[in-house]
Length: 81
Image 1 (spheres, rainbow, N blue to C red):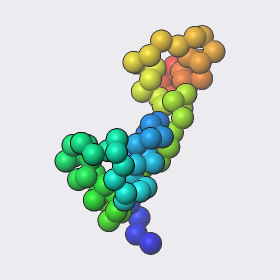
Image 2 (cartoon, helix red, strand yellow):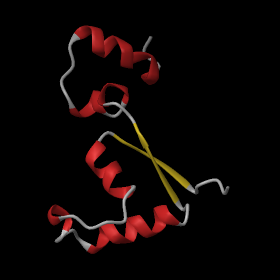
Image 3 (tube, rainbow, N blue to C red):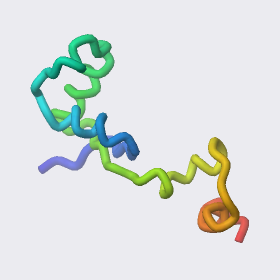
Image 4 (cartoon, one colour):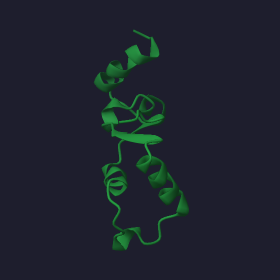
């Protein structure tokens, strides 16, 4: 088993499900060529996708409003606390 070149964390479970199947569905009929390109890289272990819950994504502190308790959990990652 080869180690993947890049690990990508994603919080979209539908995207992860589409990567795991080779079947085309009615809703995936018009997906852009970029999707197929990414699937090819995932199939040859150049990319590996991992589910990450939205509350664990550290970049969200810059893009989404947080309540005080949630903000406090992200502050150590910034070196603030």
